[in-house]
Length: 283
Image 1: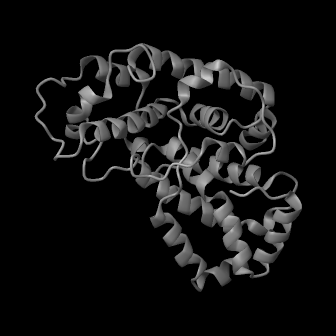
Image 2: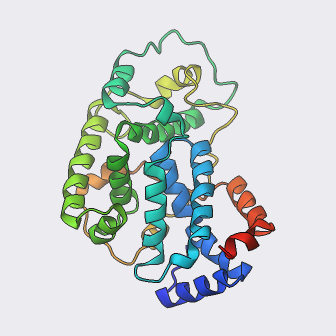
């Protein structure tokens, strides 16, 4: 995610579309982490985010010749990613949609007392951290796709309202108003139910076995606690403009950014080395 000028990006695009594999690899590498993090928050699981990230980056590659530098490269990529994700139907929560009422009811009434020990000798503190990151990410699935995208762009990526408006094809004013309402809705839910980020009685450590029983976390496949976290400032550096955000943003510290998984990088590298690439570059 090294910062480059638009002129440098345009030069890389020109080289990539002319068949320069190194230039193409540089472009893909510069955005793969932001695409993965947007996908993870939009879709709720690592597996779905990995699949969507590959789809989005391949779509970016196939449309690379259409980038003319009229906007920042990251804005262009965000637009491709947001449009793809808002219409993405292959993820788990498209089949099993959530709502705040259901999630709150499960927190209040889930029978967590009589569940046996299912930790499989994994430390409870580690599992509690995994559940905390997973739970708050899954909570975002209670928002409709458009609201979820607005929340993620504004809260995790802190994108300027003009840039966000361009990405979502709404006015900056409409974006700011909707972001404010959505953030309050999420903060109210956290405040009412969550004992980790709010004033609620739900504590991750108490619900570990219940979460394992309901297949919400897997002691043998810990995604969040094993993922490589990247500094929040790195995410901020992907854009040129910022606007002030109010203190409510402190309620959303669970939106940590991660490196895209090695499997995704490996699959993309395989593609960059494949014969398919020459076909796409000629399209």
